[in-house]
Length: 83
Image 1 (spheres, one colour):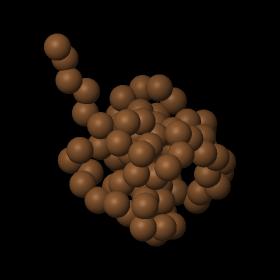
Image 2 (cartoon, rainbow, N blue to C red):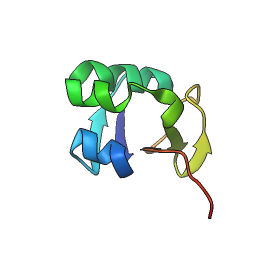
Image 3 (cartoon, rainbow, N blue to C red):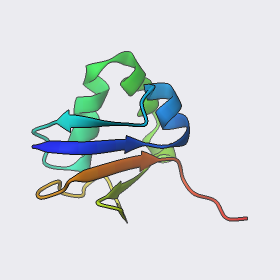
Image 4 (cartoon, rainbow, N blue to C red):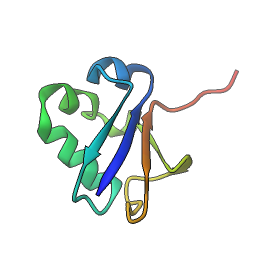
């Protein structure tokens, strides 16, 4: 399947791209992360501490076990804080 993957804040800086189209066979967000980490060192570094990463699937906050069936966008970003 083809997904639009979007990166925000320091994830975008580490990966070097604001977004990209990814061809994947991942069934869940966790599997997508595993595929991305295996690509290059910059992805491995960006996803090395998953406690510091949040995810949205089709603009809905979710967890790493979320399925990717019929999904068009996955976004990764650091935890949000209020102020």
